[in-house]
Length: 197
Image (cartoon, rainbow, N blue to C red; front, side, top):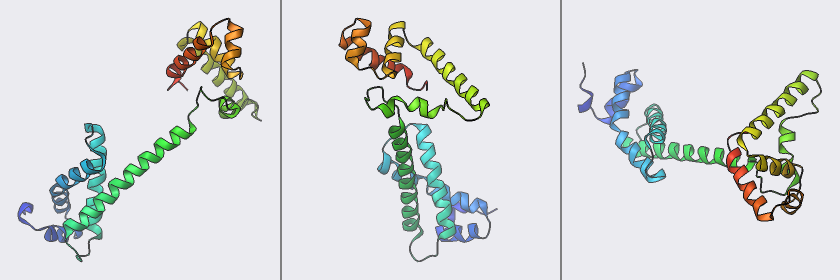
């Protein structure tokens, strides 16, 4: 049995390219501290779950670096560049997902009629086939039941009027409340419904 700890990076790479998975694993393990250093430089301190995600990404980068290494520079430099690029790609990917969520989020503060009618666009009540229409109607009914359970009676009244495109002032007049009370109710509604839709 080989003692992989005494082999150079280049010797381990040669073994790994010849199908020796223990050599590859040994080299990946050898570069774990470098991976952690790059993670800390790029994203700072993370909880264990997120750190494991980036650590796995870094390990894959080392594995790919082993396969792609041609020997024109030191493996350490080559691995550093591969790990750093892969970690940056991972960060960019996560940020793109956040952007998509942010851009598609439904804001109860918006006065834009398109935002207010987003639920209707998501759940098409004018579906062509009857089965889809029934399923859509049942989905809307289920949402309303959830809303009624989560919201107080007052909040539910504010919510239904808000979805009908009433302004805060009009809702306040209709419910005989102060406009500030309506604003506060909408803020509470927003907090309660995050994750329910």
